[in-house]
Image (cartoon, rainbow, N blue to C red; front, side):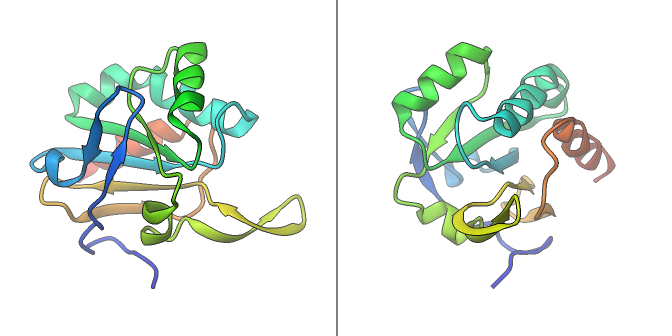
Length: 154
């Protein structure tokens, strides 16, 4: 099943690079930009993460909590966040439970080759825990600006 705008966002609880576990239910009443990405320290993922970092103040001013999710370990997330000055939590979905629930884990095409892994997707979740917007295919550069504009238009 593919998640669409209007659907209830699947709840989750994952360990975060901030040293705590973060759950969607714990963010009730807040808008959340949940972006799922393939791998720490890869070119597209660096561009996307830095896009969210660079728009961080505007996103926070708009009341949006940014969360990045990949299957990488907390240790990998810590190094990635420190290297690029990321000021938002990165969540470790090592068991791929959240990635599967959101439809981000599965077959994808990488440079013409089919492989299984994390798809680059973003979900804007509203204050009531519903999906306000879904980006099933994301171009990393400037993506945070798209998310911000969609949130402001909602």
